[in-house]
Amino acid sequence: MLENLVIENFAIIEKVDLQFDKGMSVLTGETGAGKSIIIDALTLLTGGRASSDMVRHGARKATLQAVFSVPNNPLLRHLLDNNGIDTSEQELIIYREVNINGRSTIRINGLLVNLKTLAMVGHYLVDIQGQNDTQQLLNNDEHLVLLDAFGGDDLQKIMQTYQGVFEEFRTVTQQIHKVQTSQQDIAQRLDLLKFQKEELAAADLQPDEEDKLLDARSKLSNYKKIADRLQNVEYTLNTEQHGAVDLLADAMQQLQEIATYDEAFAQLSETVSEAYYTAQEVGRDVDEQLSELTYDENELIRIDDRLQLIHSLERKYGATIQDILVFQDKITRELSDMDNGVLDIEHLQERRESLRLTLKSHAIKLRDARQNVAHQLEKNVNQQLSDLLMSGAEFAVHFDTIKGFLSTGTDKVEFYVQTNIGEGMAPLVKIASGGEAARLMLALKTTFAKQQHIISIVFDEADTGVSGRVAQAIAKKMLTIATDSQVLAITHLPQVAAAATHHFLIAKETTHDRTLTRVKPLDEASRVEAIAMMLSGDDISETALANARDLRQQSQHLN
Image 1 (cartoon, rainbow, N blue to C red):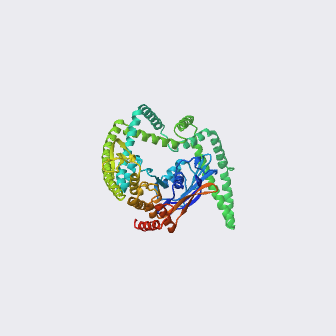
Image 2 (tube, rainbow, N blue to C red; image 1 turned 90 degrees about the horizontal axis):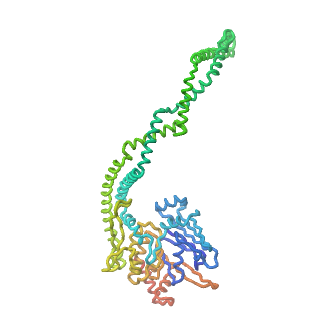
């Protein structure tokens, strides 16, 4: 809900700081006192366009700030998260500054945002309804959305089933279009994929092949150096009498003769023995390596050719053999898709026709379900109209069938109304202004308040042109809406003012040759006086006060 509204240097308001609570709040005051300015401020804070004319004369800038508790609305939460707006404190602080040069600064929870983002967020926060103005109800493009929301989870499940088939139908349709408009491109792609597959299949690359080839190439390229070093090692180890093995054998024998005299000598003897046997084993291994060492120039050429092929493929298909093998799998799957008819237009057309028939069946089920919901909606709204003493009014949901399929089905829905018997039904957007229109919008707002998920609904003199029993009925409907959404109402009707949970008085005064608007919350005694003034004018009589008290008492029984 809207918890706090601060307005400074805006129009004729120098500064007001208003605290709001749950339920229904009314703002009353004489014509021209500045009630509409409060609404204008809320409009700007929820995405309205600003101009320098809004800055109070003599001030450099106007500042507006509203604090909202964050509603439990997944769509709003998703929107805020996507725009990086922190809501960990469970509140939204919207700040807007309008400079005398016309520039506007907008922040939500301290984060700078643009006007579009503010309007998107504001859509979930405040709905300002004037005598013949509401954000969603008069937009016939939204009527289907409202009907579906009114249908609840059961209708949503039918919609989701339809949309699942629709998405598949759309995907196949797009594939057909792609095939039809890109036959040459597809043929060229097919040729390229076949060439790539054949080239890679012929190469028959192995995952660790490049490393093995590089090792083999290095060995062949350094054949002479390797052979020389191995021969030197063999000579050092195995030369008769002076070879390392013979010398170690002699040292081992000398130490063995004294090993029994001291443990340290025994350990030295064991160590030298190990070195002797190790040297013998190394000598045999060196002999074996020398015997196996060969130089094959043809093999070196073959390795160079193979490495050249690998490097050429790496330049074309991937930085490593592993990357090339991944690419090979990818093109194999793509070719398999083509071979299996994924891009075969005849196969696709058959699939599309099958999906079309399935989709048509689900669209009919969706329409049937919507029509059942529409009957419930008509009954609900017409009851609301009856409660608002509009016995001659009638509300109906009009269905048209569109050609083709949309993600929402094949239905076009528009709300129709008849405000008086015999006038005939007409689209809601064409209703006449006046008290009847105001009551009609109030009936719809009462019905859709929950589905619209708007936390604060503002009625800007939406009760104009009515009085008496109708006024009391309007007050009761506003209280009904206030059980689910916070209601702010600017009103001239004492019945509505008496029914409100909270009452603010807006007054205009002149100080130091400047006109100022003041807003103050009223206690019970002040409320009675304000209602009496609405009944009788500035000259408040005892009769008016008694009537005001009576209205207050009657209002306790409206909920």
